[in-house]
Image 1 (cartoon, rainbow, N blue to C red):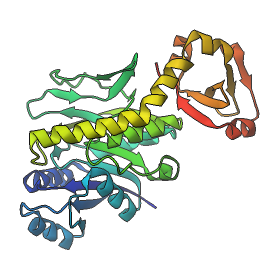
Image 2: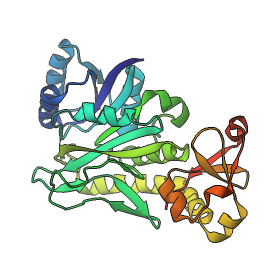
Image 3: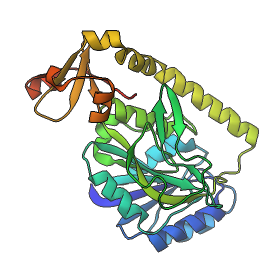
Image 4: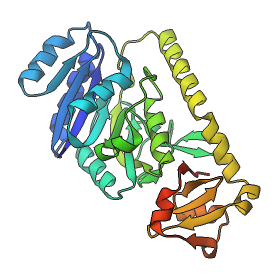
Length: 314
């Protein structure tokens, strides 16, 4: 593993966008990076362009069929060796010092496993700036608002962030795992974010602006809708239980029965039904009306032995 960032781009008939994307990377990236492009059997003349990039030292993998996003991302992960891995859509234009800022954000806390950005369309409107969860509902921050430098200009913990520009740490792959390849397209990054949070890691929004054309792969709208529906079905079947558990854990009845515990480390957990469930920050601790004097201090070795449950968000 080296200190470079592996930038992984999946291309499927998006050559015209890909050229602009790579040009913006070359113009605006100061942090050392390695470019890896996975081509999913494009038929739009991409190969000629990608062959030229390959001659310049870019790593290019040609697939014989369209493997979808998750499988292609996992291919890129296995090829690379960078400390950080950044997944980027081909219909993206990056902005000055984007990668330097994202890495700085990731390095600001060892518990951060995922970093995302603010997406803005070509008309200057915010697509969204991270997704938060409230009362079991997703809130796409800033959606449709006119972008300004002062809007969403602070780091924020999120339920998930957009996979169009999605940074992870290689060191946590052994714990969080690779992308679930049942997701052909859509929801793969949200699933990864959920798995990271389940293990007590942070998923954060970093105030870095990228321009997202959202046109990318030329897929029939009906087919795109069907793909999204399929991914949503897989995601909901996989995660419905954890949502219900989270609601149960923050209920007054369960909070009364549970024990608050912590070891030598700063993390505080709600111990319930044989598992430790992470309370990720003081704000949530206070909003649950918990008391610090009720926290039982245990040897860190005992805390580590307790099976990990979910991260509590409200």
